[in-house]
Length: 291
Image (cartoon, rainbow, N blue to C red; front, side, top):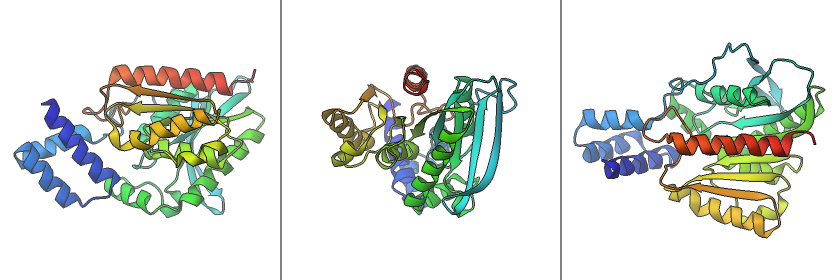
């Protein structure tokens, strides 16, 4: 059963990250599972159900949270903002970068989790210039594949630049991203010298030659079975440390890509996710809190 699940996840990852044709993908899944019904059930267990594992309610009285729209870097912008209820304390700001599914209920929940941990949080929808994240995940992934990456980086930098100037902030900014967002955190660390800290969850990495441009402290959270990502992410961590950058790499053995996403039954690993989250919060508190 484990071998079947691993092969199914490999097929699903090829479909979702390499923009393969859905019909061809489902034909392969039917061959693997033995029937259409079994293939559909297998895909459902792997695919995320964004609202399935909400940990912090949208109306939690301990936080303030809302979506807001406007313009950043000359283009339409939307983001989900979350923060602890006003206490008079200046707090650091963390950008939460979505997966290739866009800004959905799961990412909003992650933003609220970080708000409860004491951070001001901004979760941008980088598909806003293309009309916003659609409900159809396949459509969202298609849009991600055609995103203006330079514009997305410019919008991220604009969000952070504003946050650094706000009176309720302490001037320190970080970023946490997952999958596509994990790769984005790595790129943002290269592009924004004012970024203080970044946490990249199973994100493909830039050319190691760019490590010297990074000023932020980085925490790389990787899945042991995620060969596709690790072929670039592990050398990236090595290059950062060789360039005397503050970079820590954690590889969680025996877990799949997206192990932190608790809306995907087949991928989620509670032990690894809990440990990775504890490390994430501790790292961000250490790097971003005023000292």
